[in-house]
Length: 262
Length: 262
DNA sequence: TTGGTCTGTTGGTATGACTTTAAGCCACTG
DNA sequence: CAGTGGCTTAAAGTCATACCAACAGACCAA
Image (tube, rainbow over all chains, first blue to last red; front, side, top):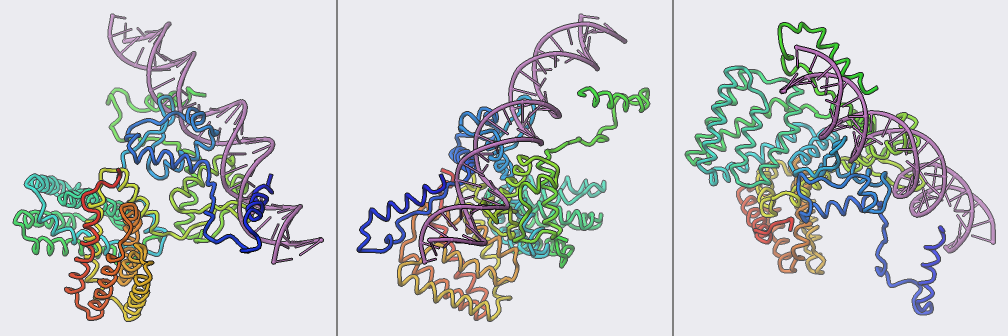
């Protein structure tokens, strides 16, 4: 019945006193939006996640069960699951004992978004690198202030590992990324740690494509890492910042100028 | 024919010399994954986007057309579109002249990811606020260095607008967010601008839920904005940083400590 | 200007067949 | 007699087909 809405509207107008005002007082009606059913399902499940009724690792009911529980068809449920999957909130496994499993929230989604932004918009890798530089430099004072002895030990251990890897020629960008992430963890601020991690996703991709790391590069970088840790241990914010600045700038110079998406 | 794969595998084993090694050298076989058809479609469209064969604003063919072009059913196409939509790559409109439209890449997706991370993981709003503080303070030197006269004029105009809004009592968080975004734009680095914008999405939500802005607060913030602009105009990095620091810290104090997801 | 109708497009449902996966069972073989 | 491999079954996701509903813009007539 496509004419029903207009009838209803007209009826309301007739209820009002037509002599006094020609139109409704404006702002009385909220725009009614009957969004997609699948979207409503997504919202419901999101809320459940947010209110922690669903924990990471939990398994949602099977598609067929969800159908009956929501009172919709399987196609609709599946579209909702696709959305949730694309948002990185659930992981879908096929086969017996399969189904939709709630995933632990991670920085991967943010990283992916960042990577998309990088590759789909006129944002150059150099710009992202600069943003990263600002951020990683900005947290140095926090790190100097907050790093515990355990943090320092962990960083030193990481440096030892990396030195060994450099000797064997197995040092790669991922190790460097690990170091920077561990450094960020010293802020004891999960948001900062995840953000730094997010940066490294697209960064890695961009660098890996550009060129593989040269052994000399790795050696130098690894040494700078160690110097940075010692500056931290000495609680010397100035020195630590300076070391990190030159370290990051050297890395940055390798991606300078190139457009990312092409 | 469910038995074919195992036969094939056995044939390969017979090809190798069984006497020499008991098992494959490990890492020889890559995990074969026949991913979903809908995912393949998503990938195709993503690459089209990435290689700029599809521009923002373009309209994809209708679902039915895509069906025939990809040689799949509508259900599959629709699932692919759901994924793309959830990733923020296309926007789907219904009705005649509707369809899937390529969206301009924006910071919204990153912001949403950030918001999810915030509300779904044990990250507190205070932590995010701190991250934002680090970032927005870190870019101040860049801004002092790079802000053009046009930038300063635009910022001053914004301040005038806001002062007017404060008088009328219509000043809100969104205006403040606008200011900070415009400030970030002065770096002339799109990545930084988008990142700041991303921060403001979840920030706004968190603050709007917490409490609406008090008029006095708006007045003070607005004045600080203007002082910041003048410090910029004087190319005084120290002063600008200090103003921004106190400004941000005051905002930060309002979300201090509370868990976000609950 | 208003209102109706047309038409193209997405949204949703129903049903069914196919594939993949895990688990259990069982015969064969060393 | 223990282990391997093959077979069966059940559960679950994946995809196809067909159909109808709802919507939004365009067009047209009173």
